[in-house]
Amino acid sequence: MSFTIRLVVCLPALACALAIVDGPARADQFPNIDPNYSQEIYAGPNVAAGMAWTSSGHLLTRNGNVIREYNPTQNTTHQGNSVHGVIATYTITGLGTGVGMTNGLDGYIYAITNAGLQRINPSNWAAPAVTLPGSVAGQYGVTTLPDGRIAYTDSGTLSNVYIYDPVLLTNTLIHTSAALVDGMVAGPGGNIAITGQTNQTITILTNTGSVVNSFGTTHFPDGLAFSSTASTTTLYSNNNDGTVSRYVFGANFTGIPTISDIAWGSGAYGDLASVGPDCAFYVSQFENGSYHGATPGVGTNWNNGTNAEPSIVRIAAIDRNGLETCEFYTPYVTPEPATFGLMASGLVAFGWLAAKRRRRR
Image 1 (cartoon, rainbow, N blue to C red):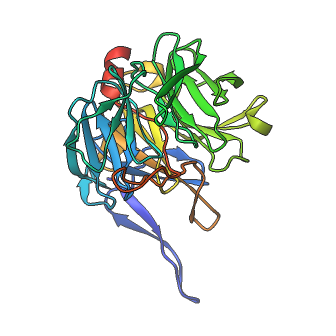
Image 2: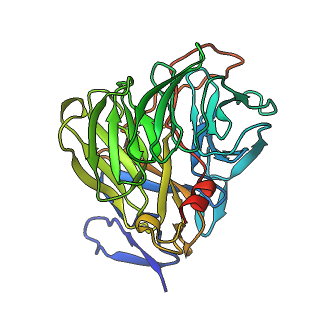
């Protein structure tokens, strides 16, 4: 029988003891986590790896042309865990297949698809997706730069990385990778980090495409996040083998990074990720056989046991008092396009795992 051990605080002159209380012990997705971070199984099992956010801070995930919106509070229970359930489902007319989506600075959501880069209006979910002229088809990585431009990849065997200007409607090739680019993210200083899905690498670019740093990793990195300030040269990755890593660089992201895992042992396939308006790192967890070190049959470690169901796990940095701090970068505002003009917002790029699983298995 499982049980929970609780510390009983005693008054002076009274004996103190540990109280053993019957009931299920708390099960975390990651059995091991750096004490400077907390974790929470945020949503599942009806989730996808592509993530963005509403103007009121609600999580969105994308599964093809279907976008789901989640309650900002825990409103349901699944497998013994209190989770944030789906409160609305939107089917977007004309939205193509693909994986990634990102919040734009102009309040729109941008998705990379087989039709090219497409724009979604979250103030009118019934409106069809708009394909941006001059863009090229892709599947996975897409992210928003601090200046409002959209960086994305065509997801080729030797992936091209483009920057699209949604105001001038121009598409510029800035870099060609030696591998398939999967996850990518822009940082507060305008750098772009990309993961090499086929060669276990991370490359950091300037927003003109110059290579700042490129290095191999022991994991297969996927979804990424920068640290929250431009002066802090730290990067994080959600890895395919059920770990989350931190990379600390020298000045301007140069030199050999110091690499450590901040969470490990989930066994699940870690895919794309996002940073929410709460500055927390949201990492997708799926079952994907033994691909890139994942454990077959493992998707989520629920309180009631492990199964193959997917989930989104929220990781937050905490201080010595257990209070959350803003560790992960997102200049999040996300105005509604029908109401506001260009403002400082945006998010990390993400996508839909189902197509990726068919490709990779």
